[in-house]
Image (tube, rainbow, N blue to C red):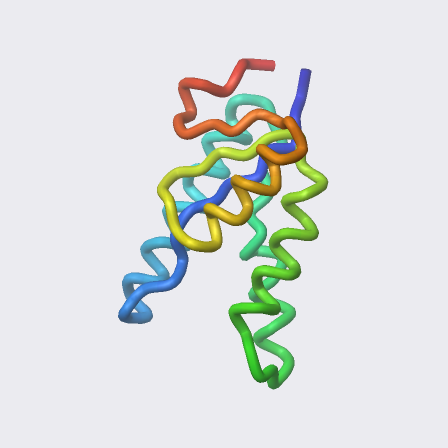
Length: 110
């Protein structure tokens, strides 16, 4: 059965280069989920284009609001590494009784 799988992990970092590396890791993991036959969702991919176009007092909160709204509709989550935001996304999915994966090997094939 094809699942909608959120992909979560660190984004924030000390430098723009480290943030980009984290972002690339999330999207690479999402690409692997797609190759397995599932539909990947990266909350940041939904949030960043929106918040880049508005002047907000708290970008982090807006990112989390959008990410949690999207992730909450997924069937499962793949957490590639812990972070405060990824932990919130994991807790949301776990609280709904849905699968939490920490490795691609744990995700069932389609």
